[in-house]
Length: 120
Image 1: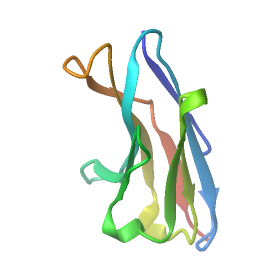
Image 2: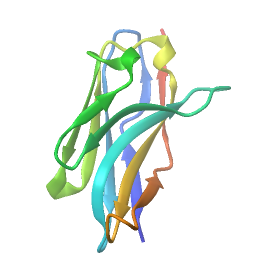
Image 3: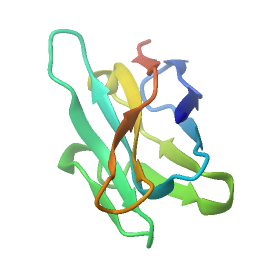
Image 4: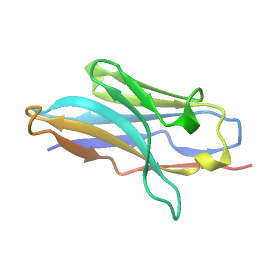
């Protein structure tokens, strides 16, 4: 059974920093990619950043230069370093992993979400 366990959210002032972590338990599954999504109140869930097994990354435009995604393959853990936080970054952040026994059987798995609130 796959579990994604997130940590690192909280309340931070504008301009502050946080680091989110997400550890995947994965039995015989292979991890093909991991990422972070977020959902603000009244809005749809949106992609924040993703990272592939080879280390290739992708970011939404509004976080480029402020957010950095990284992955520790040995620990099956993905991190999101967030700097220069803005009130509009306030959201529940969800960890995502694309995993499967084989590439053909891969599917998305989701964490429970961690709240990030940016407020003075």
